[in-house]
Image (tube, rainbow, N blue to C red; front, top):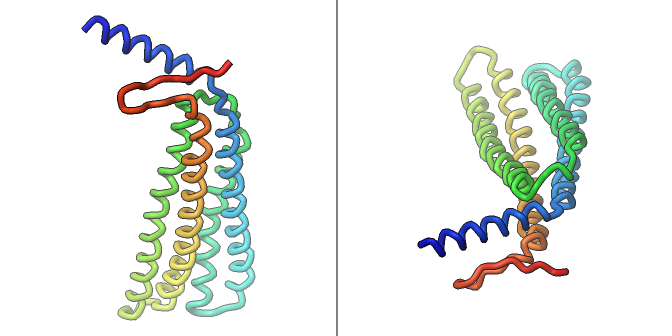
Length: 197
């Protein structure tokens, strides 16, 4: 029992020393670069929708007007999120992460993107609900229908955006992080760390 305890302590210390000696900054820098690109795509979509909505909302009536007004409102939020995300990515120092922090950051981004993908499906369903509800009401059905169509458009874009972003980040984790762990081995009965000098 004492031997097993000592072996566990030794393995833990070796793994700790190994993880602290790892330079994870290239992997973190790649993640942050992908986040910046994603936020630029989201911000560009938002600016385009706000600009088009501002011009077209004043020229349209009824359902079309409400469609463009919702696009303006929705994308004001998108632009705020994109700005915050971009600023966070450019001000984060990739060298400030140890192995655990780098992995936690990678998984956090992936979880957020998956959660958002699920929410996007909910947005599209909510838009469909508004369109259906517009058929059964006498109180400004054109507003419900216009809002519903806008929410379907925005939710659909965000679904594609979030899913594509998740796949890009997950591919990075599965392929490029393998390089980071190439020094570890496990063959079913033995585990170890290979240090190359």
